Image 1 (spheres, rainbow over the protein chains, first blue to last red):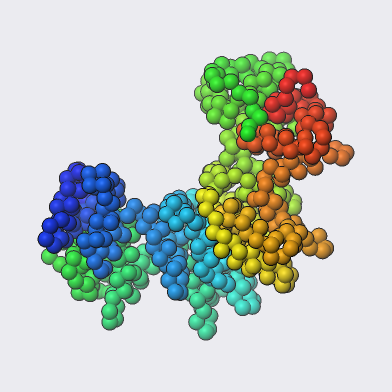
Image 2: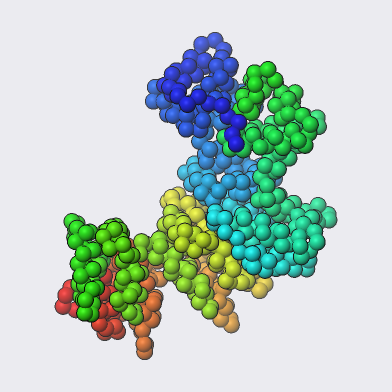
Length: 317
Length: 317
């Protein structure tokens, strides 16, 4: 469930005017910007952006970029983007890192429905004049390329039917391959992971455990550390339980010295209208502390206020 | 351009009623069925099918299947299906042959736009409760599986921009791979063929010819005959020039003793509203005879009349 708190009735024109007023003149009134944008749904934000463009002949995101800075600027611009556009931008950034971040790609490809992924791929083509697949393929190599290209190309069946016999058969195939594969050549694993529906895969993972006596993720632990196997494990974990995955990402983003603001912003922004409530609950159970408190301790200023608002925090955190 | 001749204004209810009348009573009046259905666009046929369902509580295709038989029944039922549904059925039949017919899969994946392929994949999921990719993957093996799964998973950029430097670079990569690959392990060839846009690929093929002195299709001729290489060549030919591909398919379907009715029906039905005029023209140039004449000589009865009508033949062929 979502954590976002948004009023049902809002005037997009008034919102746009208030944001403009907060941006012009001496300094910017970040409080106003947070108080509006952190409490509007994706559709409402889209309408504000359209109204803004119409009234001021200026893109709201350009305006915010020129007025704000740092993590706060990045998170708020990401939030204002239409969700598929946002995912497309996140994917593009992940691909163009010196070492492409397979985790973001896997999240985008596996967390939501086939139609959601498709919307991201359409937005990607529209913005970058290339397909997501070709960019992923051009910036990765070897086995990890095979996995990621197949993942972003997937268009899984979304129904709930499970063919148990097929699940058993494919668990056997995958088990044999993992046991005997030379140099991690896991073609069947990739094929099954990137084409079957999620309920079907979960049945396959269960049969795998029965056959092998150990979970498929444990079986894919290679020594020395291997990025491809780590990516396979990540994909399996996301398919099994995306909430658990996101809880882990925010936990790691917050833990230790320093904060991984990109990861923290990404999870909060992309899940606030989906399942952030469940992520928060799991975080609380695992860490004996609320995610709001942890975020409040680890961040500061407008960035902090904005994240807390998206987390649905009461005023008195 | 299309060969289909259809009136602008038709009454779908009247059409449905006339077809019903042609189906009931002693014998079936195939002439009426041909005279109506062979002269209606995809949208008009869809509306006739809806009207038929509403008036008679019966699916028009079920009705036609029970009244007609043989090649005529198959071609007319294929024609009445919505184009993406039809492609989904053709793909499913191709996959489930004792030896999956990679040619039909490649045609469906490469001849039309990314959005057209997507519509087929949606229709496939809806009808078969599985994704097209998973069925292709489950019924093929080895290199041909890698190629076909990547092909049906593709969602190419449809714009006309070409990056010549990239085309040159990838032509070099592909050239090196083809020259040195052991056991036809052509991963880069598959990656490039299945992710890049068609104009980009054509630029790459041109650079390939400059680098190698021979065309990429010629370079992919392996001895002994190899199905995977044949499939790669087919994909390249379809991307370069789908008209040429379809002309070849109908030519082979007609040539020699016996006729390949499935292939003949498939090309005529799937292209009649797209580019059958160009296919006919090329056929005439290559064979010094009109495709209508060739079809008229090689087929008979209502099947013949129907194909000729779709080919836009004058009454006096």
